[in-house]
Every structure is written in C-alpha cells, then in structure tokens.
Amino acid sequence: MGKSNDIASQDSAKIYLSSPHMSDEGYEQAYIKEAFDTNWIAPLGANVNGFENELSSKVGAKCAAALSAGTAAIHLALKAVGVGEGDIVFCPSLTFSATANPIVYQNATPVFIDSDEETWNMSPAALDKAFQKYEGRVKAVLVVHLYGLSADLDKIVELCDKYNVPLIEDAAESLGTLYKGKYTGTFGKYGIFSFNGNKIITTSGGGMLVANDEKDAEERIAKVRFWATQARDAARWYQHSELGYNYRMSNIVAGIGRGQLRVLDARVQKKKHIFEFYKRELGQLDGIKMMPVNDWNEPNYWLSCITLNGKVKPLDVMIALESENIESRPIWKPMHLQPFYSECNFISQCESGSVSEEIFKSGVCLPSDTKMTDEDLYRVVNIIKKLWR
Ligand SMILES: *Cc1c(COP(=O)(O)O)cnc(C)c1O
Image 1: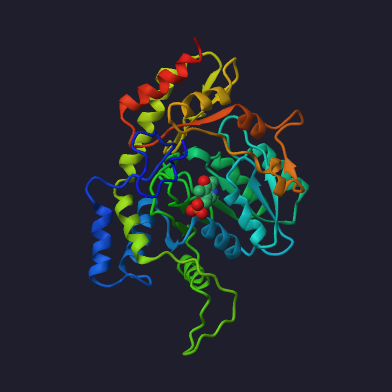
Image 2 (image 1 turned 90 degrees about the vertical axis):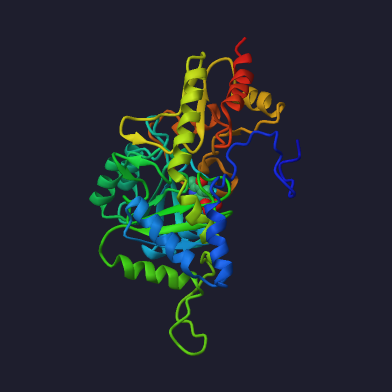
C-alpha cells in the first residue's frame, strides 16, 4: 500500500479501479508531436478544433467547446442557461460532488433529487414532486448518468418540457453510452464530458461542453469559449465587459484527447467484457446484485458496480481486495449526506427512506481497469468468492 501516488511509475502489480489507458498505436503521441512540430503548444491550435469537431460528430452534438475540466464545463453550462444568485437547480443526490459544486459557484441553490432502483439515477417520480414543490423557482435540471448507466431520459425530458426548464446532462462518466440508440450528452440543451484521469478516456485532465438544440448553437458555444478565455472583448487593449474564466483546454491536452477518441469504442467493448465477466462469475452469489442495465440502456460500463445485501458486506469485499493490492471503492456518498450540503433540501422518491442512501450503503465499485487481463479478473473474482465459503 501507499504506492499508488508513486510519481515515477504506476505500480505494475496493482490492479486499479480505472487508470489511464493510452492507445497501443501511439495515436496520442502523434497528435502531440504534430503540435510540437508546428509550435502550437499554446494557445489553442489544430488539436483543440479537431478534438471539438471529432467529439461532436462522434456523439452527434451540434458543436462543442473543449475546456480544462468537466467541472468547468458544468459551470459554464449553468451560466449559459442563466443560472444565477437565488435560483434553484435540481441535481441528483447520488453523484460526485463536482456535479453540485458549480451550482454553488453561481450562487444558486441545489435541491437534491433521489435515485430510482431501475437506473440508480435521478428518479422521475421524485423530480416531478420537486417540480411541484418549487414551481417557478427552478432554473435548470442537471441530470447525471452514473457509472455509465443512462438516466430515464424520456421521462426526464418530458418533465423538463412540461415545466419549461432547461436540461443539462452531466455525462462525465457516460461518454459512449447510448440511450435508445442515441448518445448520452445529446438529450439536454447542453451536455458535458470529462477526460479526468479515471474516466473511460482521458487527456490527463479536461472536459467538453456540447450544445445540442439547433437554435443559435454556434453562437452559444462561441460565448462559452469567450467566457473560458478571460472574457476578452474585441479591443486592442485588454477590455472586459463580463466576468471571465481561464477554462480553456490546451492544444497539447487536446492532442491526447483526439488519440483517445479513436480507441473509445474499444474501451467500451473491454469495459463491457469486464462487467459480463463479473456478472457470470459473481452474479449468482447470495445477496449480490449487479448494477441495473435496462433494455433501453447500452452503457459504456465505466465502472462495474454491485450491491451486497446478504451476509457479505461491502467493507468485507473492499478489505479483501485491498489486502491483495487491488483497488475498489464505495459508491458515491449522496450529496444530501455530505457535511457541506447538509442544509440543502432533498426530495426522496418515497416517504420510507431514500434509494440513493440504500445504494450507497450496499454498493461497491469493482476494479474496472481496461488494462486488466482475464487472469487479473479471475484473481479478483476468486478473492471475492472466498468470502462466501
Ligand atoms: C469526474 C466527474 C465530474 C468532473 O469532471 P472533472 O473533469 O474531473 O472536473 C463531474 N461529474 C461526475 C459525475 C464525474 O464523475
């Protein structure tokens, strides 16, 4: 233990939850070399444009802005739909804090929505309740596709249309996930993706904001790029009429992204193989349930997650794996249980308890690293199976 932060090299014997996996073909380095050869180290350059266009056409978005992080993309999406001081934004409780934090950056207030068991994501029933409770004060709905499982988008889009509130999709974990044949991130007015080190593809760190509805898409994305580059007005000197941010992606980082995008489909295939392997080997054990994969959901299987409701507890699994130098993790701790957000309201699906809390208490994220061999996978499942003897 204690070696996971080794800066010289990653621990080769360790099995990771999800670590960077560059292409065997060296695509990333070729794009970076091109940037070096043309001295487009900074600012912007061909890789940034290329990455924006290639990602947009991959997922079927109108246009995109490459940014320094997924969190920055969420922030600017909220700004773009006009979220500001005193507004309410609905967001799921069961997510990573980076979904909710930008709501606070904009001096708005999050109201946390419970999950449902069918998707683990925002419960349409709880969302409907929340709309009724806060009618007229809601400026945006921020939906998340957790672990690569898509939310119940038809119902959520219908509710947002009914109450005339824009939808933003936090697809940080779901690049490559299809909902009824269409990529997640393209259902909302805006969608965001993350290329953080643990995501299905990575640029070492980065994000993308995509605009979907046709109306003024190019103009709206141009505005996002403007905010992301310090909001510099068109003047000879530095002149600013608006608050700016330093949120743009660099041309080097975008080169890694272009290379990674070329292996996205292969990564999804491998992640699916990992999930199917666990399902076959562990799915029948007493008390285990695999994360929900619905008929309409073609996930990217970013992380393979299970819940345990029998004699073997999540902590038993995590400790057994840890002692063999294998990484696993609890499910995200819901936002309404976080000290920082303890004052915020939470709308649960039903009166008797919360689904998100149940998933948190019983869930484990299993190692889902695409560099794992089948031999590694057998090692993992054998350690887990021993707990049932
Ligand atoms: C990773 C992640 C983010 C943040 O992305 P960064 O690129 O790390 O800023 C936001 N939301 C969810 C659900 C994530 O998993």
